[in-house]
Length: 162
Image: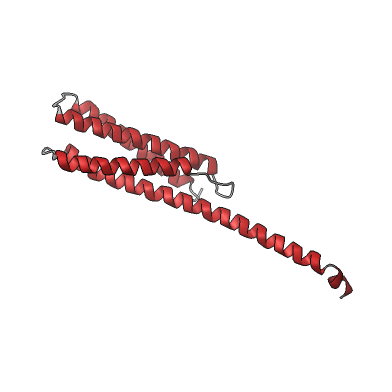
């Protein structure tokens, strides 16, 4: 009993330090999960907007007013995706943290190229450019690269089973 009285302050201090360390790492992990969730949400938003934008562009009766509105929404979604990818700073608590961050930047890069190719295709349709097949192929290639990078990102994530 005498030992407990003697070291009571030290024991309380040790418990406070342990609890503080636990909450610090818990908060860091929570911030990592939130950053990943935000990035995934912005990618899903971009993917949906790109899908909506590509349908009228590849349709035979192109409505330029509708595609202009969808193009501006795609631009906004790309800006958000780039912001989330650039801001994705993960701690060592997330498995594959470095690979996740670099893959997120790769996804954002492919997304920008994907959107640029779709805009080029739209401009080619407007100007009656003859190289529509080449532009459509480039668009499909970048869409495939973007979706492959996203699948790799999902495989690296903390919920993946590797």
